[in-house]
Length: 144
Image 1 (cartoon, helix red, strand yellow):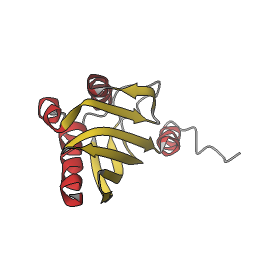
Image 2: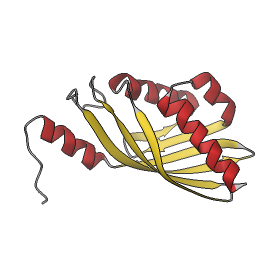
Image 3: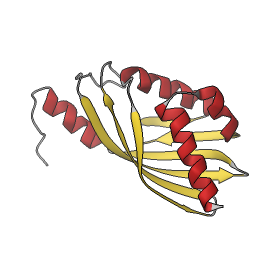
Image 4: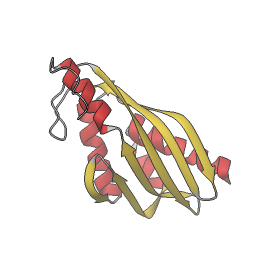
């Protein structure tokens, strides 16, 4: 079961984050899918998740999420991923720099009856902010 769940999560990432094939994605999520991230407030249902992704994908049109490590036990999966892409349009109050940005995220996934029912992602926002500060000429912020 763990191998199936790993493949399911990798397929989810490919359909959602990497290609934006949301109609196909709809077939592998539960009807009560919930998404949460440290990058935005609150929880999102499937439609809210799609809107969130579309906003990110418009700002980083060549967005690529690479799974660096994946672990599964029972109905839980954990991924460590690198998010990278050319930051071309403003998103979430951050101004684009036209350069490729790259940052890490760790996600926990819950699988139920062969479908993804939740994704919770902790994003390394500080690394993204550091890259934006360096590219804007503001330098690297000093630790307090």
